[in-house]
Image 1 (spheres, rainbow, N blue to C red):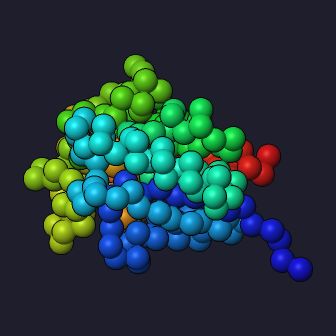
Image 2 (image 1 turned 180 degrees about the vertical axis):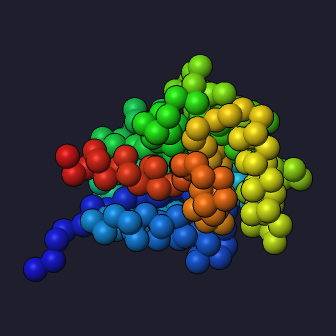
Length: 220
């Protein structure tokens, strides 16, 4: 008889119509944490995801509604909000009786276990607030890839190149010792390992960081 798996509800904040892309973050987590069965769902009417304060405000009630449904109707054991701004995480923690993990807070927290000089790279103007609050004075540099506005831009042919350029400049300017990716779209394009090899620094993938936190709290 096989080991019973924990059911994780993963909320995507981009309204992907391609099931393969929609399920990608869940597959990344399942590949590394075999004790999980990840069920991915996209919020509606956000074709470009979250990329500024307005799009985040529009997404939060959708995230809360979807997360509540995943727990109360589909019986999830935990939730992951796959966005580095942690939208709806605080609200969901009040609404549901299972652990709720945000990719941003997970990435920032894990980054501090690697070093005390952390740089971030994302698609918004500045590091998401939840990450800033955790990193505090350990946040020594921020970067945004040139020409990237939404997560869909990262998925274009030049997406990885733009991220690589931004990270090279970030390391040179800030002398950071670890990079926390502050957009889960960078998990989609699988850039963390390539960055580590090119830069010689640990790079924290936010989706995998959230998966790790869920694994720790559910199996401890």
